[in-house]
Amino acid sequence: MLITELKPRETILPLLAGKKVFIINCHGCKEVHFPEQEAAAFDRELAADGQVTGVLTTDYICNPENMKLRLQKHKSQIDAADVVLVRSCGVGVQTVSEYLEDKIVYAGCDTYPLPGHQGVTPQEYKCDQCGECYLNITGGICPITACSKSLVNGQCGGAKNGKCEVDSNMECGWERIYRRLAMLGRLDVLKCPVQIRNYATDDEVNQPAQSN
Ligand code: SF4
Ligand code: SF4
Image (cartoon, rainbow, N blue to C red; front, side, top):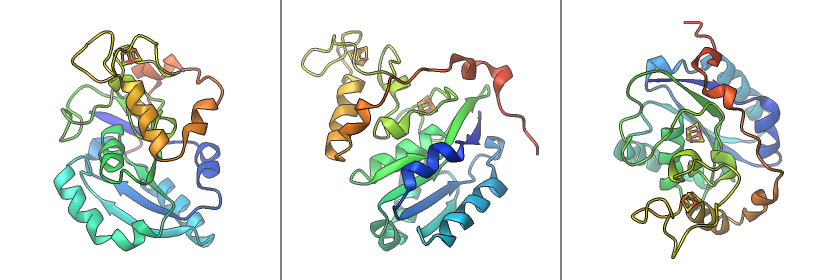
């Protein structure tokens, strides 16, 4: 299982500045401890600025088939948005990102570990609950699970013909990230300063406290 915590406002607000946003909140796994009140207050603030094209609050967005049907109902609101903000665990964000492949999809939460099962599609989209979600700078592809070395600063340089040097049966995760960022016209994010990983977030004693 897992727990989610909203990313800090100062992290999310610059991503949304001047943009129209469609928001998806996933209330699927109750143990996730979805920060409902905090999220609702943030949504009202964005709506007051006229930025929100729609809000979908649903469950189990990690189920691709259900999620596709729900997103189709909101197609016009999603089309009107520049970006989609997803508040869920890393599996849910990756599921939406894969489906809305021509949209910029941002993760609104960090995901922390608890022992147990995560998501209903763990074989398709993986999240290692690293506590410091990188999906916003990797085009919605998890560098922790898509790269054999869990590199967060870019490719190791060992890939051959697009295949990972550790496992030649898998695509190099960082080549996938590069292609996706290129498709979205977001290669500039790779010029950002080196992302220093805070490994303290891997420690379960550092999980956010549950209040309900
Ligand atoms: S970067 Fe990957 S492992 Fe970390 S929270 Fe995001 S999806 Fe999960
Ligand atoms: S080849 Fe790619 S996926 Fe494999 S370890 Fe290097 S960067 Fe990671």
